[in-house]
Image (cartoon, rainbow, N blue to C red; front, side, top):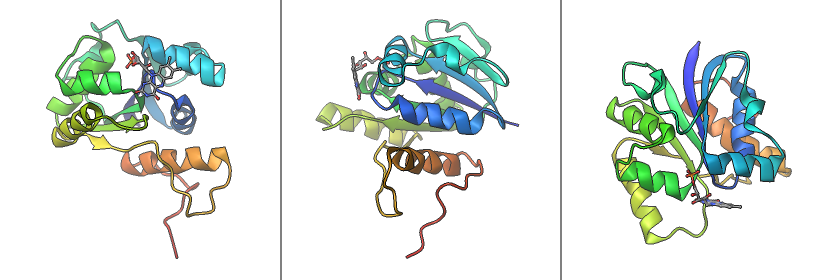
Length: 184
Ligand SMILES: Cc1cc2nc3c(=O)[nH]c(=O)nc-3n(C[C@H](O)[C@H](O)[C@H](O)COP(=O)(O)O)c2cc1C
């Protein structure tokens, strides 16, 4: 079973995280971290509590609990996905701040040259945001913005969410059938 860390931070678009979680939960080992603001957005946008993620192959962590096995480089994981990724979290990771569990696991993922997928959600971007995103890209992260395409018959909100989640599933090597390769 592949092992993923899913980090949910305080940006709009927690629906992407929920859908990704729902797609992965039965066929991967999941470690879920939700920032304090991420928990507020979960409640605001979806009416969900962090406890939604508990159970089965899933371990849920407090973001303040840095002293845990997943904070160590010796904990081998396949990928970390930060979804949605706030500009605050992105800025702190880009400047090497490793104070919360999300920041620390991202830091370790980069130093161990493992796959870090960052799904930013903000508009417009400031120069600071763009510089921080470039820093993460240069450090080895994959920046996969929450900006779905509309060219494959997407006409519902679920289709647009699936567009992004399918791209992430492709990137982490998990099978998905809801977004086939584009054919003109
Ligand atoms: C309703 C609401 C929506 C927000 N949406 C975004 C967003 O889309 N993108 C973003 O970067 N920050 C957004 N923020 C700001 C972040 O939540 C804030 O910077 C927070 O400190 C991020 O903390 P975290 O990265 O630890 O989760 C939003 C805040 C609120 C209250």
